[in-house]
Image (tube, rainbow, N blue to C red):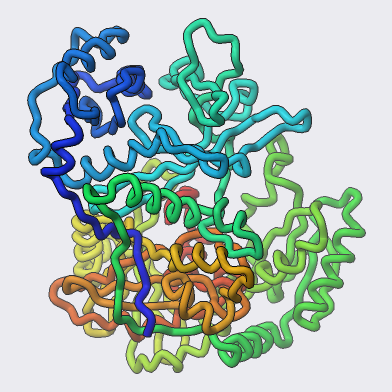
Length: 605
């Protein structure tokens, strides 16, 4: 069993040696907080002795300076260039009084002066940003519209978090949504400097300005990992940046500080095998057997060819020739062909119709080469909705779980309803795979105990994303964490140095380089039980879009942990096409039932 790594830092800090080389200062503002992107966070770096700035909270930040006399006076002189100097104080602070998180972040932020051609870094507004020319987004005239970068942040739990931050050109302000409280003018302005990093825009500068905001509905993503043939693919991914940052940190602070990543040595694992994939394919085929599929043309203008091609792809996927028409089938499965949502601003919106049939939409347009995967997902969604209407599972053999009694899955949902803001809903699955859905509230006199438990769990525990209850009323709680797994980034980088690149994606390669990001794994640490769902190892692609987030399984009211029995419920690919689902699939059924019956806010899950 190969141990896997997480983003939890394993570190050493030689505080006495650090104190011999550096001075540290706490800058505090009386009462009010520093304004968003306050100049106070950047002007200290104009002083040569200042190595780094770390924004702490609303009204404080820390400054790290090379050891020297009159450092406090030099810092005050730099801050004197701002209009907030009269509200600032610099109380005495000793190196030993600074918490580990702050000191680690300050040392990391000093890397803002260690840029090279491949990766450029700067310490801006108290944060550490990494830049790469591959992440620039340009318009048709080759002008830069957006500059995306990676922020490296030490969290309160002493984990290294990496987040994409995007600066967008003021020329694109019409593609950004602002509020009266925060109009465009209220945002700090930046320029793309000659060092190819973001910098404060000087007052009299005529250069193109940027603000730190995304375009509406167009979030830029940087791959979590890319293990393509060329080293560049790895370097341009989040994990490539983490490897580079960690190496630079350890080289720079040798003898003073060192960082590495914590390991999980023992775990239980479920692999998605070829036989499992074939079994699921057979189950899906059986679920669609004898089903009538109808393609409903809701566009009716220049849509005949699209509907005909859709019909061909559906037949290739499941062997069923769908009928094409304009009326839905109450008993069958309906694929509704529609336009993009924005095309329905001033007309009747087919997306919002409450059909009394099993319906899934597909948007007309785009390259039909990508429609096969999309239609595969559409068919999965249709079967899920069909199962919900018939209250019986057909995409999964429930008897495989070994549960001989009922099991219930519960979630909290936020509603777009003035009278009812939140509801608690449950899906009960019986041993024969039949389903029962229910909403629990204070008026439920016969089961008020369940409602009371829901209130206590969802309001009293952090980051709850679902609960599972067995027939005895024992509850396991699923909690999100800020914890994720990482691959063997240093081994991967070393492998790229060799003349012949290792096959990272082979079974042996996955075991050596990727144990932390593949398949489903469950482990214990400090008395708690955790699990994560990674990418499918068998036949995986070179690029992995997202990290495998670790979730905690918490016992409620001293209940036993029975979640291990639920792990196979995530080893399915019908929730996310050809990807595993991060929570047991009944939560998908429950969320879909709620959407079919209530007005749910889009960010409710």
